Amino acid sequence: MLKKLVFSVALLCVSVAPGFSFASNTAPESEVSKVEKVVNNFYDSLNRQDSDLFLKSIADPESEATQYNAAHLEDQKISYKILDIEKVNDFKYEVEISKIQNGIQYPVIPYDVVLENGTWKFDPSNIVISPKDVVDKSVKSIRPSYVPYSNVVSENENFVVGKILETDEISTKSWETYTFNSYSADIYSPGSLRVESMPGTNDEKKDEYNFVVANIYKKDNGENYLMDSEILNAYNNDNVTFSGYYGYHKIWCGNFNYPWLPGKYNVVW
Image (cartoon, rainbow, N blue to C red; front, side, top):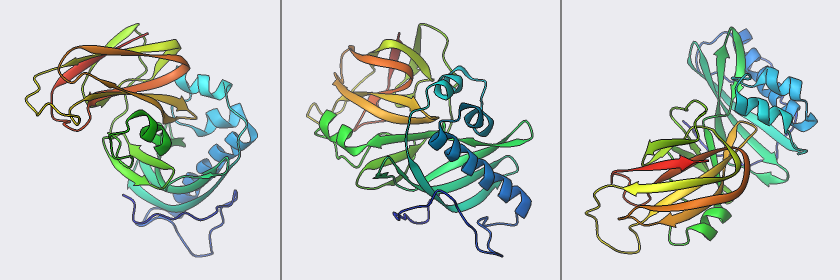
């Protein structure tokens, strides 16, 4: 978990003072160095648009979503600083990073670095990022600092960051059904994704706070960025089609202010 937020201008090269270790436990120094190195390689691959280094640095490089991202690296400038490295278990570290991407400061983000086939790999796949201006514009009645994540970990004036507790496998069907308040798998959109909401029993008060929200997230460099939101009926079946979206995306749908209310939703593509 995050201990504090740091919003300072970062450097591309991260230096560590002699004798200082990021790890908050007794992890071997050589292991921590490997974790730090793969983080540096990952950001180096993005700044250089180096697809080979990207695939060597990121977890699950053989997946269709990762292969797609590697072939579509965009020209961008990312400066960053590693704030802390903490060992979770023998197969995972959590690395807190402060970054400025294309001139915009992000909140501190607790990424995972995981041991995959004997090699440490950077894993941003369970991070979900929502720009606050998108939330403000699309869902005006909702507090802009709140988004329906399984676990909100940080925010600043630009973004809210959530961390998904469990990730799904890539979907290969033309439609899939999910329960309310859960994220879909990584789905390849050929241009549009249709979300069909099917609310269950709703015994809450009928007012402006009782509604269902469908969100679409773009899969970019392993992270998930909120692109658009639509409000749907909280009592009856409803649907929305998100058009103009190509590549891998995630969907989230549920009753925004009453997350305990039951329901399901389909994603059709």
